[in-house]
Length: 308
Image 1 (cartoon, helix red, strand yellow):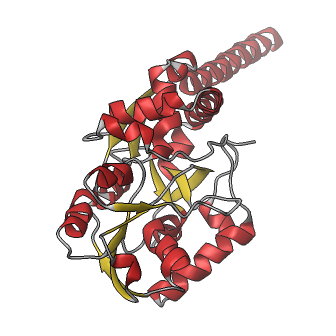
Image 2: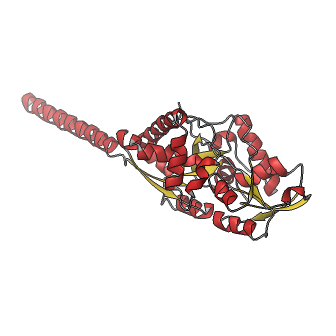
Image 3: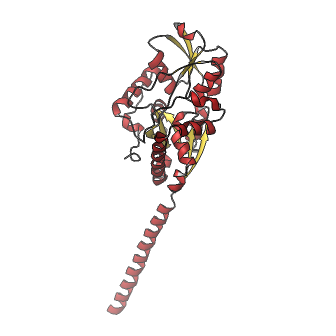
C-alpha cells in the first residue's frame, strides 16, 4: 500500500512538473511572439528626418523590427488613426498630448522630436498691427504664435487644420500670416511668400513622438529598438546634415527640390524627454488658451523607459 501511495505521489509530482514546464515554455513563447511591426504616423516636417533615415539605412531592420510609415497633412486624420489603433504611434506635440490625456485617451510621449516652424507672411503684413494668422487650434502652431507674435501684434486666430488649405488661405490673402513646419515653409517661400525664422530658443522642444498605451504594453521591446535606431540616425544626420534635406525632399509629398538651399534644419538630438517644469508651463498655457482646467500632471504625459 505504501509503495502504491509512493508511486502515485511520484506520478503526481511528475505531472505537476510537466505542467509547470509547459507553462514556462508557453510564457517564453508568448514573449518571443511580441509583434515587431510598428505603424507610425508622421507629419510633413523636419522632425521626421531621423525616422526616415533609420528606415532608408536599414537601422530598423538591423534592430529586428519593421516600421511602416504614413505621412499625414491633416493632424485630425492622424489623430483619428491613432485613436482607432490604426497606427501605434505618431508625431505630435505636448499641447495635443495634454488635452488628449485629459480627455481619457491613453497615450504617452516617449521622446521629444526636433521641429522648425517658420512664419510665412504676405507682402506688407509685418507692417500691420492687426493681423489674421492661420494655425491649428490645439497645437504647437497656436502655442508658438502666441510666443512669437503675441506681444507685437493684435492677432486674430484663424483655425485651419489642413496644411495645404492653410497655405492656400495665405496665398489668397484670407490670412496675413501663418505658421508652417519646414520644409512646407520653404515651399511657400518659393511661391513668393516671406519666410521668417524665429528659432526654437528653449532647451526643450514642444514636439514629441507618442505611442498608445496598448502599443506600449504589447510591444515594449519593439518600441525600445525603435528609439535605439532613431538615435543611430540622429548621429548619422549630425555627421552630415545634407542627408536630412535629401530624405525630406524625397519622402515628403510635393516638396520642391529647390528648397534644399533654403530649408532650415534644427539641431537633431537623441531621444530625450523634457523637464516637469517645461511641461507644466505648456499645461498652464493650454488651460489659459482653452479656458478650461486640465486634470493632468507632467508625469501623466510621459513614458520614460525607452530613453533610459
